[in-house]
Length: 344
Ligand code: SF4
Image 1 (cartoon, rainbow, N blue to C red):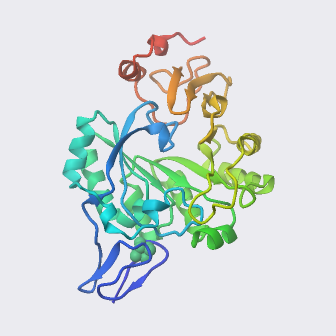
Image 2 (image 1 turned 135 degrees about the horizontal axis):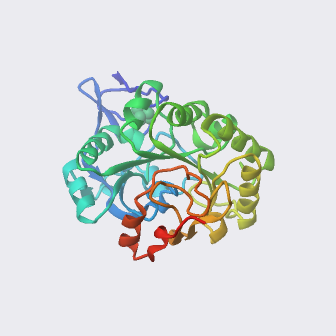
Image 3 (image 1 turned 135 degrees about the vertical axis):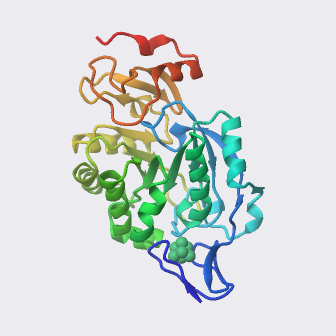
């Protein structure tokens, strides 16, 4: 028997058995990651798909995930792997060295630990992250933020950027629909914003009737402003019926538009919509002069108006985030030399 302290579940695991997440096993009295070195496949994605809109926009990311999760979300959009305990889904074997090599070969700027919860396969992700940094690659965690206090800094300090799912602002929702708790997630958000150098963006999947009330969206947004700062990007994304919540409809675009307005009124500077066609909700606006500094259509960047000092080309306001030299971005994407435009 051994206890796993990686996440707040603190599973007691009998010899040969697995913890709640399904991939951490008690072997010879120790908790080990039983699937180290295996994943469900590698893919090259635009960084906007993570979603991260203020972290080297327009760059490519080598993404991979495994199976299992430390939550049990009834609405899981990746349930096929996240809810799986079927190791035959781990079709790809890749050492950390091979993953880093592939990322460089594909011209990726970052490697993302994503698709299922990377905290539960921390040993694998952290070794990849360590090698990435040695080789000049950035690292990204797409996570539910449900990690123990002791392991929080160990894991996230190796990440250059994180997108954390804030699934609701209600502990009741977390308990009922995710089999988790809200407080450790809020603690992770505070840690990232206040004590780490990891670039942070937040995503909330809006589910009709469960977490999409004006009151909850306002509470959540105000908490973000107070605790993470008004320049933390927030993404509202649309739910699609999946897994155990097939009886609910997909989120109407109007809900996302309304949520964005509420969050902007609450004081957040950068609020985005996702999983719908909404160029305005996917564009980055300068918080000072309100001009579009990065115009997007879904994951595609159409206009880029941030200069080499990460400032708005219209008014000079610093835009929060981590940005490539404008020249690099233009060369990579064949943009016109818009980044050289004089500030107006
Ligand atoms: S990481 Fe997995 S095994 Fe460890 S405490 Fe969390 S759910 Fe349990």
